[in-house]
Length: 297
Length: 314
Image 1 (cartoon, helix red, strand yellow):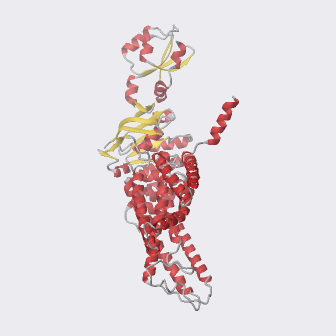
Image 2: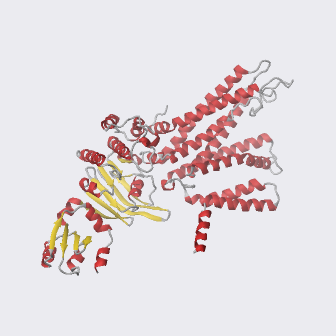
Image 3: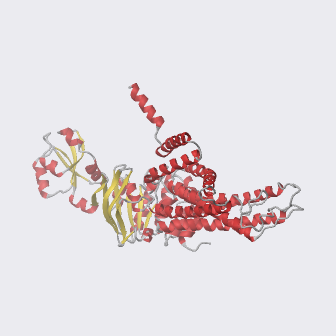
């Protein structure tokens, strides 16, 4: 079982929003989707879900192109947080719609989870707080029993308790390897603890597909103070600058080999300290402009 | 009521609004029937609610006191076309439908099926109610006599009118993405149809075709039905390519802007200058062209003027 996105492109008003997006996704995976504001994360979701008609490319589920076999779309779940029809309906009415679309929709579990989180089933969706709406969206996603669940900014603007609830529910759900999550978020710390893989969107394209475990095995984040003001070649060639504070440099070295280690230590830095590598560091390393180097030059 | 999942989903979604339209229509039918019966004037002539000369004719009953096919039914069809297509767009139900696993073709024809099913039922119920009111409420000394030829013709003509009006609002709601401008567009077009049918009738009964009024009516109805079917098929083709990023814009299909503009200018010029002199035609053409441009391209004149003044002031 797998979902493949191949060459997916979408143009809006003459502007290329996403271009030639390719990736694979299997149940059991939690994939983070990161990128700066306006880079096309939501457009990617909407195009995958057939809200937008793609200029090119395909979404293939278990070998079937969704355009050719639309029924496969029932294996994907996505609630557009900006544009959805739920607003005027009361929560108890929602299962009627979702059970017509998702054959495995678990109405009992829906009711149980709504009660568990003490949400009034007689409330209109639009009357709920932002956090409650996010919870209801996730409850619908989980109880739909769709294989591939797309969550767009599920942690946006939520308090720590709701965030924890959402993260816990996602992790619990993934345990039996029957479902996969694709989560776009600006909350990199939250994604860091959840994701196995991270897709990085930049300039309308998917520029990196990180496996976080592999990255952590070979990359290092180093804080160092050098004796000279000049940036040594080893850093220019092998590292990405995260932060400059006076003479203190924080760099990410994606391929931290013994040779690099030797070269760095040969510089006899005043300070040399390894820091924990986070998703935020990868994000900064790839998306922040290298103005730090420019300034120091 | 509906067997397939997609029909059930569409019904689930639209039942309240369709019920509202049905209630409004039945209320209108009851009101019109009662007013019709209470406005009967003893003019000393024949005391028939349906003109005696019409009873056995293959012509619709459209008398002062009794209309065999209530005018509320075409109005209900007009509203239902608008509701079925536009509400899903404005309330973002299309997002749910498009990712529901049902092909767009199935969704489109299912919506049509549900709407027609409800309208058919409404036609039957409203007509039964109307006829019951006339049967029970015919004033003392009057007769309400109807015969199959007139009744069937009335229903046929009325049903074709309803289908056509439904097709107009349905198609307009498929291509227009803003609620207010959509209502103005279909409202204006619907009202203009009275003038347009007059023009068509004068052409058909004129020197070129020499048709009688009855023949012209049937030709017009057949053309109306063909146009409605064409709109349904064209709508289905467009729906297949509907991409929701244009939701909220006047035209949901930007490539239709120029064709719509051309049709609008020709139609409006024709409407306002038919059988008038050349100067009237030129004025009608220029005004239609300007209005059509402003309506479809929406140049932000105020904003442009403000920017120009800002630039001028330095």
